[in-house]
Amino acid sequence: MPFSVTTSRAAFILLGKELRLEFRTRELLTATIVFALVIVVLFSFAFDPTPAESRRYGPGLLWIAFLFAGSLMLHPSFAREQSNDTLDGLRMAPVSPFSILLGKMLANFIFLSLAEVVLVPVFAVLYNVSLSGIVGRLIVVLILGTLGIVITGTVFSAVSAHARMRELLLPLLLLPILAPLLIACVESTGSLFAEQPALDRTWLAFLAGFDIVFLTASWLLCDYLLEE
Image (tube, rainbow, N blue to C red):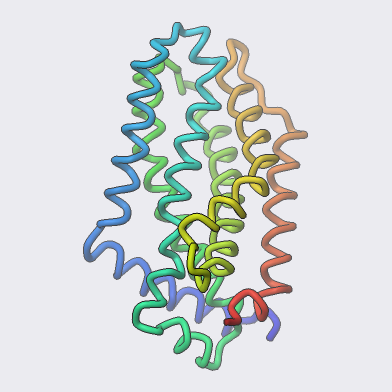
C-alpha cells in the first residue's frame, strides 16, 4: 500500500496509543533519562575535563549517552507487543505495515528527544560548554542524528522482536549500522563546540542522506520486516 492519508492517519493513531501507554506509567522514559544522566555525570567525574578537553571529547561522550539511551528505549518497541499478541492484531488491521513502523518511529523520536532535552543542559553545565549562539544549529544536528538512531533502531527492533535472544541481537545489529551516523554526529557537534563554531554542511548532508536512505528502505521492506 503506498504512503497515503490512511497510512499517516493510522501512524498517528498508533503514535497516540504509544504516548498514552508510556505517559501513563513513565517507566521507560524515566529509566532512560536516569540511565543517561548517570553516564554523563560519571564521565564528568572520571575525566574532570578542562574547557578545551570538553570541546574535544564532549561531543563523543554526549552521543555515547544518546546511543545508550536509545538502545534502552528502542528495545521494548516491538518486544512489549509480543506479550499480548497485539502485534498480530496490528498486522491484521486494514492498514499499511509501514504505518505501524512509522507510528513506532514517531513515538521513539519523541521519547528520545525528551531525554535529550534533559541531557543537553546538564551536559553543558557539567562540561562547561557554552550553548550560546549555537542552539539552533545544534537542534538541527540533534534532530537528524536522533532520526537516524530512531529509524534504524525501530526497524531492527522489529526484526529482532521474534528472536529468543533479542536483548543481545538488537545491539549487535544496530551498532555497526549506526557507526557512520555517530561519526557524522560527533563531527558536526564537535564543530559547533569549537572556539569558532561552524557547521560543516558535508556532515549535515550525510546525516540527512542517512535518514532518507533508511526511511525509504523501511518503507520498501515493511511487508517483510513485520513478518513472523
